[in-house]
Length: 403
Image 1 (cartoon, rainbow, N blue to C red):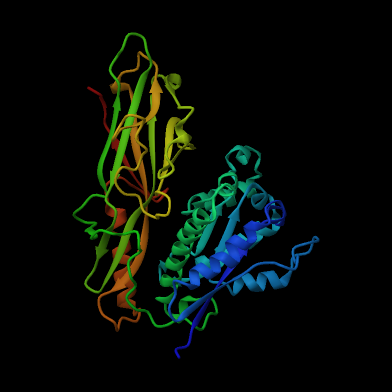
Image 2: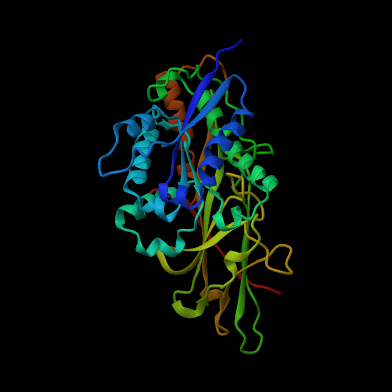
């Protein structure tokens, strides 16, 4: 019988949330652990969580820190009380430090933190301290699952099972990437095998395109309605992305995806002439798009576009179509006297490296190989519109008038 590699998850949650909804801890530990193990061959996954109240009192418990430092994956039950807790923020900071230390030369191992949003934090964000906001902003940059409790409690058993299975798929993907790492990348884990060719993520269902010859944007369009008396004018938009790209050298290849996008529209001549929609958040759940305020464009109407539920890459039709529309998304409204030429639209893209693939099985990270990796990673910086300060690619979009 083959030996089993054991991968460990640390479950970070607020005890107040567990007391308020007792089923949550079971759902995201025992049920999730069983579902993940059903997907693994010759490996096992165990989730550790504080059952003994070790975080009570004012003193940090060394056992918890030891458990975090021996974990491969951090599972965060994200709520306002989680953000408020000094203990859970410390757990996050310790694991993030470990995550950043997993390197192959200049290549950092992909994200090993799995946040699960249980209660909305948006309304409470203005009350966060600087330290709490820093942690929350870091989490928002990551891909997370949304499982709002008010909806979750209404799910029947089959619907809960589907939800847990989607989260299990994401964590299985993290485990697969960890299984492909060399031993020296891990933080004290002796079970990791020699580097092998890693498989593509499940959600990538199409062939990858060469990043040097194919743009990551299939189309990006912004239109404003024609004048109708003195009525306000609707602003429509839609963005389509290529699902998967790659950059390659003679010996290695890295797959990329668009992990997040920001679409911003502003009128510098008339800053108060654009209006947000009250019902934009209530669009269909297969889309994840919501208003944000960008620090570099505070007067703009900006929309953050995250991957669709259960995905980690943006693809075509990224914005939710408006009622009665098959393609166009109604994203904002302008006062009647605004003209298309006054509007500036910009798309800002964050890319994510999906995995490193060697073209031969004997590649052991020699200095020449490390240099090849650096050369591959630098390709993104040569794309038009790359902003070194933010690490994102920015593109201007022309604004037209809808027929």
